[in-house]
Length: 324
Image (cartoon, rainbow, N blue to C red):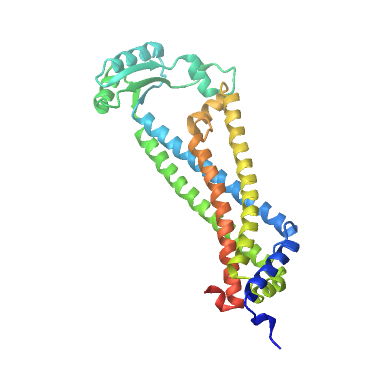
C-alpha cells in the first residue's frame, strides 16, 4: 500500500496542516504571566536606558556650555578689607578692565545680585556688609581676540591691590574632564543595560520554547520549516519588545518633561539659579528625544533579532539540518 507521506504534494500539505494548526493554537501564547513579566522587564530596562542617555546628553550639553563660557567671560574678585571702599574699588576695577584690549564689557555684580547668589547657602535676611563676602566684576571678553590675561591681571592689581583676576580655565577644564568621564561611564552603563535586555530575551525565548517544545517538535518534524517557526517567535517577541520599549520610553519622556517643567517653574528661585548654572535648564532638547526614540526602536529590533537567533539555534539542536 502506498504511503500517503510519499505522494506528490505531501510536504505542501504538511506545511498547510502546520499553518492550520497554528491558526487554531498559536505556537507562542499571545498572553501569559511570563510574557507580561518580559514586557515589564523590557519597559524597566528601556526606561533606565533612556534616563542614562538623557543624563549623558545633559552632561554633554553642559560641558559644551562651560566651554563656551570660558571663551566669553572672566571674573575680577575684590576681597573686602578694613578701610577699603568696596564700591569705589569695584568701579576702578571695572574701568580698568573695560578699557583693556580684547575686553568687550565689564559689569559690576551689584549688592542685590550678590545677595541672591548667597541665598541658597545663607538663606534670606542676612546683612552682606557684616560678612567678608568678595564682590565681583564680570568681564566679557572677545573670543576672537582675547585679552592678554597676565597683563590684564597686572593692570587691575596695580590699581586695586585687593583684586584678583580669574579666567576660570583651571577649574572649568577639570569639570569638562569630569563631564567627559561621566559621558564615557554613561555609554558603558547603557551598553550593559542593552546586554542585560538581550540576555533576558534569550531566557524568555528559551522558556517559551521549552513550554511549547512538544508542539514545536511535532510541527518541525511534520514539515514546518525552521524559518516559519522562527518567524512566529520573531513576530511575537517583536510585538512584546515594542510594547515594553514604548512604555519605558514614554515613562522616560514624562520624567524629562517633568524636570524641564520644574526647572522652568522655579526659574526665579535661587536654588534653580544654581542648578541652571551647573546643569542648564534640565532640557535634553530634540537630540535627546530623538535618542529616546532610537533606543525604543533598537530594543524592539534587538528583541526580535535575539528571539529569531535563539529559535534557530534551538531548532538546530533538535535537527542539525534546520541550519541548512
